[in-house]
Length: 339
Image (cartoon, rainbow, N blue to C red; front, side, top):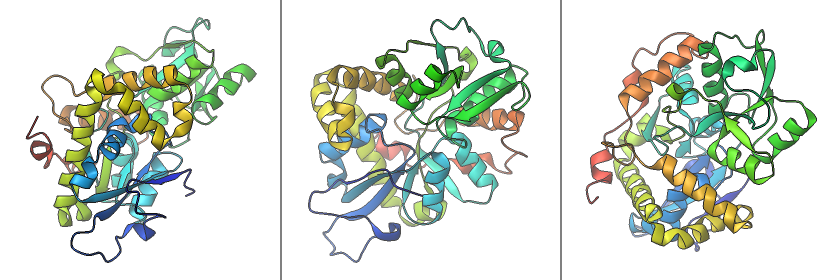
């Protein structure tokens, strides 16, 4: 696993948190927590950077270090190896990790509305997944959440990978532009940020994701179940800070400050202010809980839909014996008590 970048959210701290275990500290010192992401975008985790910038983690006694790796599988590997206390993978890889014996729980749903879509060039003439028969779909990573999402869509359309269509790993965002330009790919399984990058780089796209798949939720925060059980104060404090960051980011009056916070996390994303603003607004919309839901809440029906889709596509060999154990809603009320 090779980190792409690292940022520590407390100025007085430098370096990385070794092996994900906090060093011995004074009683009043902040608790060091490493969070590992599936890609280096700061805007994708806008509430986290808002919480860092506004001091919400510090209010909870937490010093948060952000790391990025390549894809959800690498995130889960880092959590499994105790290189991070918290990770941000997709639901599909989380379910598969549990199927393989990793006792990991999705404790905070950061993206309750779908963060993924199957995109094609606007002038391609492709209008539905059925039109991709015999075509190649670009993906960021072979085992990422976006790949499982696209495979599920194609399976529902009656097609089998390797026979009716194929995947090609081309990388995230801007790298997909080259894939389209060279003719290597005909479609791209994209996160919200990827789609914005494609359009910003002069490749207008059309989202051909069927409506029934647009409610599949995106990446959220996980931790090993024993860590959650042994450190409820950390999980409660972390989630409360993220929920406060979401509330802050959702207020249009704070957009300029929010953009400053995310630019601290990834300066490259802040180089084009208009693009950063448009992407941030799209991310905030995807991270706003649906009516009747609260910040961080996991929807059992949505988990069932993910589970069934993975079984149908062959990404999951057999049903989990206890799907409910894959997620945790124990802290939702505490996170939302003042909202």
